[in-house]
Image (cartoon, rainbow, N blue to C red; front, side, top):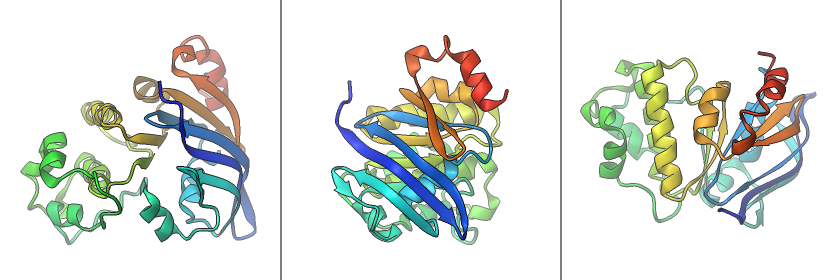
Length: 235
């Protein structure tokens, strides 16, 4: 069972202009875990990932990654420290083909996946490797957005809504990919709206409510606490 904290977030606050979005969120992610952030729309899940990466206008509190305090670091230095962020909007370069998109991010540490390993994980991308980003389906774009950060050697992956709007067969594929990455020793913090999908991949679930962590549900408690979870999520 993983035990060492890769990420320790304490009293994290974040602002966009004068509007405060996070109000002291605290949680941890241990080595080799898949952890999800669940909550209603606007609860602060995406902002939590953006605040960890330092891409909010202002933040305070503590973000400790691999024993190193990162709250004062710029977003590029945080990325180079070994945290990779896959945003909900995917950020695929439309004019570049699949392989050019894959080669774009810099390698920040040894141990990243090779192009061949990435194509083994995502056979669809190998078939489309000479296709422009603008020609890919939504599912293929999501695969590419995840695949692109696997070359970097980052050890902590922040994935924002990777299943949003995707067909069930692609959601199932993304689930297998996440389980594969966990088996490779990567640590994943995942924002999800789909609680049932989250239950298939995660070790623990944090509930975000009004910019704070309201609760934590372990994987083995998921079914017995489903009524409470539904109340949190408003479903």
